[in-house]
Structure formats: structure tokens, C-alpha cells
Length: 78
Image (cartoon, rainbow, N blue to C red; front, side):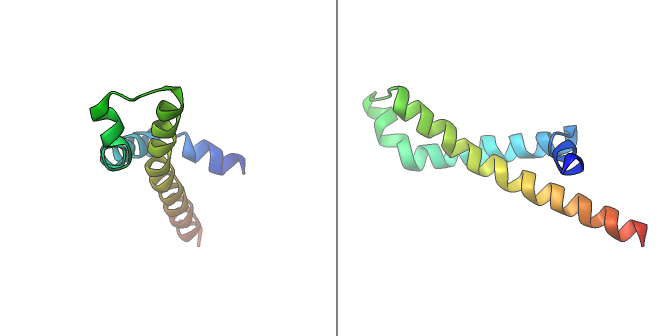
């Protein structure tokens, strides 16, 4: 578990995940919250939902990258 966590916080994995989260998160926020943004109806609850919306595209490449790196490491040991 420690190895998994260490990989998930490695520079390359975090950088990739942040890039995806920025791009995909912006699109998801526009789709899911764009009407509220345009109306100026942003409150604390809305901001929390937007933050959670960005966490989804952050999580996907993190999980995928760590899995791929660990798989590659396992294959290299054989």
C-alpha cells in the first residue's frame, strides 16, 4: 500500500493527473454548472460540487498511471 501511495504522489503521476483534471474538469464544470456560473448563482455548495467535479478526472489518470507503472515494474522483475 505504501508503494502505491508513493507512486500516486510521484511528480510524473501528479503532473499528468493535474493536466487531465484541468482540461476535463473545466469541460465537466461547464456542462454541469455552466448555467449557474452564467447566472452568477455560485455559493459555497456550488463551489464544493465544482471541486468534487474536478476530483473525478484527477482520480482516473492517477489510478491508471499507478496501475500501469506497477504492472510494468512487475513485468520487469520477471
